[in-house]
Image 1 (cartoon, rainbow, N blue to C red):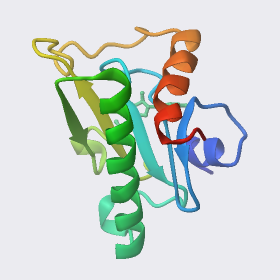
Image 2 (cartoon, rainbow, N blue to C red):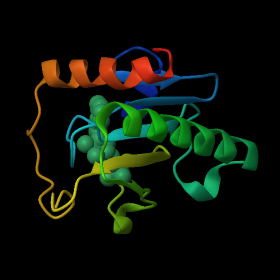
Image 3 (cartoon, rainbow, N blue to C red):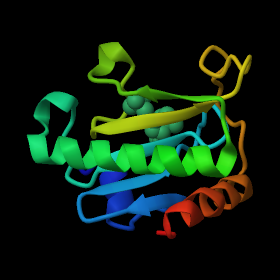
Image 4 (cartoon, helix red, strand yellow):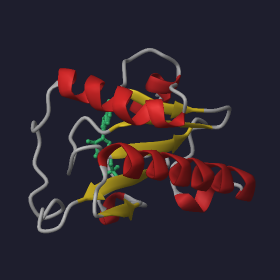
Length: 138
Ligand code: AMP
């Protein structure tokens, strides 16, 4: 069965997209640790870092940097966490390679206070427009 991220790539379920190219896609996390929390995925369904060929790993890395710059420009956080889980034991819940970009503000305790249901669909859409406009839209 296709992963939930493959279903997003195929347009079967919606996502608030930030950036897209031939090999990668970036969209907002529906359960964000902070405002602007974004996932960058490879479109090809491969489970973990260990499964990606070097060119695809590089493509994701380039997109992560591109999106991170747009987030800095749009939201002006004080910093960013790049988080990437591999395997259930690490906390990976979607077995389709992805990188978390988590904007951070001084004293926000975003990772320790990460809890579900903290953002509405409308807020996600507004954020996606704000960030994606910095990279020319989706
Ligand atoms: P991980 O724990 O590293 O596998 O992270 C998976 C992330 O995917 C979690 O932060 C979820 O909130 C997020 N997520 C799951 N389903 C969706 C979805 N349909 N759209 C956006 N983000 C999602």
